[in-house]
Image (cartoon, rainbow, N blue to C red; front, side, top):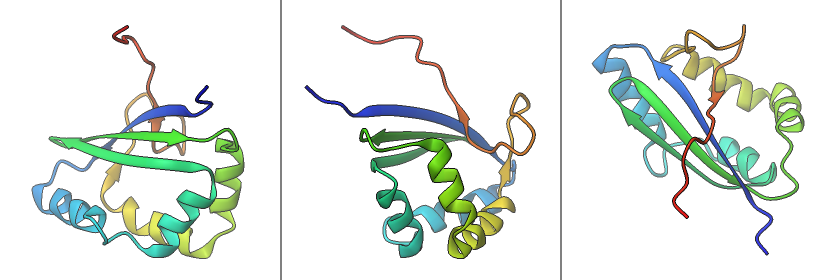
Length: 115
């Protein structure tokens, strides 16, 4: 039986086509810094995809049973390269209006599944 779990999250980008294009370029295949993709994989994230419509982003993550979002946040806080990447991405991102203070990616609730 598959023990993997899926997370879906949302975040907005600044409504500026030039910034959106730059953000997409940073995330194009092979462009994300290797230290960032390594930190993602080492946290138990098996697959991560980001989709964009307009200025809204949707992230889908498949994680294994070792993934702990609190531990990932702690690891990221102590990783200078991840902090550098996060600071770089801050120029593009806008928290959703209902996000908690300091929260970027907001978890989404599953409301439908085809069975």
